Image (tube, rainbow, N blue to C red):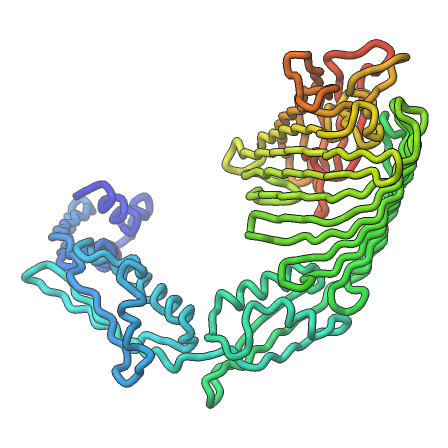
Length: 557
């Protein structure tokens, strides 16, 4: 008897489980032993020992039970047949379409009951996927050949009629229009019924963020024309929200944040939002309008009006931009966006003062298989951005801003409470002369997301009077160890290294700046509240302080 069989027998034996609590009478002991015979036989049958024999002997003078087990040989699966209705012409080719391999059935292997039952479930799923919504197993014939020690299985299947998607009824909608639901449908009326299309449609409706619950069902019987009327029952979620917040960091000073959003302003899921941030040295307002499923499913049209004012050691800028872009989901892991932007920049107190009127074409390709947007524990992402830019008023010039960012997440323990997170970012600006590129468009580091610990946007080539000039390339690497404590709290330790360079290509031999730090996290449904303290290891005289303090929402990457 092998170890697997032995473990199974001990796991079902009442004599073994209750040996520390023996019955008080001989009759009770006999009943317990008789129960074990049934349990052990059933366990052996589950491993395809269909000719097993189990007996027991009770030694009265010792209250000892001896169980004799003869497993016999393992019975193998010699044949597995599926019989469909002979009068259904649509069923003639099903044996070729659904093979034993599809059912995970291997002839010659042990004839486990689990294999047979699982095959039935898979068969019904396969028939459902092919449009037979009411398929069922009418009869299962299991024939045991005692001479050959084998098992033959015959399944008699009632497929029912091939069914098609029928008319749709929507219940529970209030502010949402019916057009919103029809745009999310993964099928057309008259298509062969497919439960996968139903599941994808339900997922698309749930991910839209406008519904508290979604339930898609079909009628219990098809119509005379074999169509299935579909009912979509929903409960709408709250579609307007407003929020306020406050924060502080050593780089930005105190700040206030306010947000307003209507996620269904015109009844088809169009979203209008406004966000305002007012910090001591930075102010920003963003008005965004999103049209979902624009021209096709999984494609959004995004309009954005942005005002930005920033006062840094390298420049003071006031920027107004208007952009429109298409954001398209290519696959479950890949997205692509493209568009156009007009940007008006006024730069002062910099190495390149002036007013700039730019036309830009923002392009982005992003791949991600991270398991969560807010709190990833495994997987990673790659984001490639390229922004060709043209100063279209005199003096004219052109340049292109390019960045490559990759993240990686790995759980260090099975409970996912200890996570290693890493990020690498490369950047390069091609085109334009050394002084053409507006200072706010150049690369800088020293922020809550890039080289924490260094003064705000000062990591770059340095000019006279310790003034950051901005760079044309960058390299930054970040490593974090994230640890969760209890249900809502956590702490992190991080290390970062990198620099910003004057040339279009990072010169890694020129020297890099390093920083270390620790942080606290408080986890909320919308992401963790983050408090970080970072120390620059290569502190620059007259530029950097002994540490930087950051408070914000969300992980650093």
